Structure formats: structure tokens, C-alpha cells
Image (cartoon, rainbow, N blue to C red; front, side, top):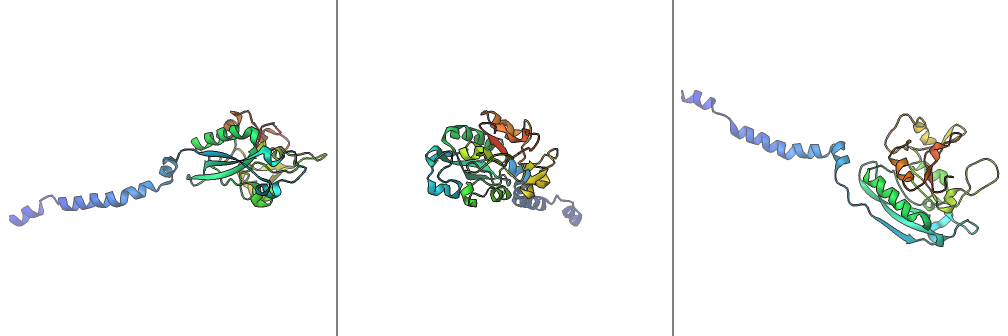
Length: 231
């Protein structure tokens, strides 16, 4: 009888042990899931504006460009990476649009729109194809527009245009995606993170400050391109 009674007693110590194991190992597993990481709190958005010198601009500027270094500003902006983590990037833009650009990127940050990287094109020697291939979001670069006909300055040469996630948002010229690694995103109906789309987070953020989207150009859509002048 005594042996049977012992066997029928609830084995609570084992239950407690199981609860301890779940407490120790279950919570970290849940916290590491992508959905939880994407919804985790972010640091507050931050921005700063500072002058920029010719030396800092490197090969993105030279005498004869339509604007001088004194008309440009270096912005430090917090953004969300594709890993859902907060980062700080830099953009060079015209002083006249600095406030509007900060507003746009504050909006993108609040909505967790992902950016791959954000550094001035001086890091690429002023070579726009290299910056695009690196999926780099950039602003000022004193270069000519990619277009047929007589040479004309790009809006980037004035610091009044920004290219966002060039791989996810390629420039399609004569049916060819630029950069080459943006070809996988030429099908705009397959919407994925980091892409610009009509009335989407990215296009709405720029539209809120009156900037236009190059993705609306029927002949040669430039999905990465946003400008203050519409060009």
C-alpha cells in the first residue's frame, strides 16, 4: 500500500524543473525571431547639419560646378538597416533643402523603411555606378545627367536630388537596369523591402515635402531618384 501511495503522488519537482527550463531557454528563443526584432523599440531619430569643405567633397566637386561647397551641407541621419537595426548615415545636400530632407528621413525612420547604406559619393571617388552597385543611398555629386542630347547638369550636381536603395530601385535606361545587380528588381509588381512604389512609404515621404519621383518617367524610369525640382 505504501509503495502504491508513493507512486500516485504528483511529481511536482519535475514540473517545476520544466518551468525553470522554459523560463531560461524559451524567452531568448522568442526574442531572437525576426518578427520580434522588427518590432523592438528603436532609439529616437537624430539628425545634425554641418558645413562641408571642398576637401570633404573630394572628387564629387570641382571648380566650375553649379554650386560651391559653401552652398552644401553634410547631414548625419539615423536610419533603419535591412537588419531592422538603427544606424547613422551621412548625406550631402544643398543647404536650401536640408530641413526637407531631415523631415523625409525622420518619416522613413518612424515607418522603419530599410536602407542598405548611406555615405557620400566621395567614398566612391565620385563614380556613381560604383555607388549604385553598392546599394548606397546618396545625394550630391557634381556630374552630368544620364540623358541623350547636349550635356546638362544632373540635379545631383545642385545637391537637390537623392538616390535611394539603387539596387532595389534601379534606373532602367533603354531597357537595361542600372546597376546590373538591380535587374532582379526590374519587375516592380513583386514588391519587396526597400523598394519604391506608387503611394508607398518612400514615395509618400518625399511627396510630403514636394519632391518628385523618377519612377514616374515612362520612357526611362529612375526608381531610385527623388528630386526637389522634378528633374
